[in-house]
Length: 232
Ligand code: URA
Image (cartoon, rainbow, N blue to C red; front, side):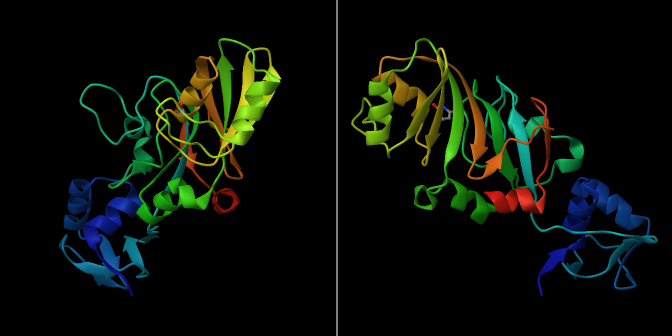
């Protein structure tokens, strides 16, 4: 049994603010297991049968969202000046406690997971999990066999920090796919920097077995399906 306040339940189940949830309660239309509830601080079990009039409401404890992050927005929850990935979410996906799992730089694009499940978030970014993240990098030069070998051995960054072995593959002139299993600050840009290469564009293609879904346009986001989550 897991009890939560009815206003929280409603804000999650209906995708509204707590203020709107309180208004809804005032209408007298909300029942839990057949009992009318009007007070916002009443606690209900997560598995209770909560209805708005005749409509059954569904409460999902956590939400897992995939975003195709565009360039120019911050991977942060809020910022006074710059738009964040949370600002970009459509209203029906917004709820309290959402955060981006790991950070992509402001100019990096591609797959970003946003959730309100802290344990899940930590598991994904923990170096112990070893989950691979794959990126497509546009470079200001072409990679060599020596670069591939250096990535494979494990790059030592300019400040002496050691990176785990990474897979570097040439996919075209000035274009490479990089797979890393950790997430140090500006890691890919710094790795290429040690090889005298500048990263012009960076796009995350996948996290573990989850590829950026093709139906999400740049700046778009949608809830992940169970099988997509399971692929990570
Ligand atoms: N590595 C970087 O340098 N930037 C990112 O946004 C992600 C990985």
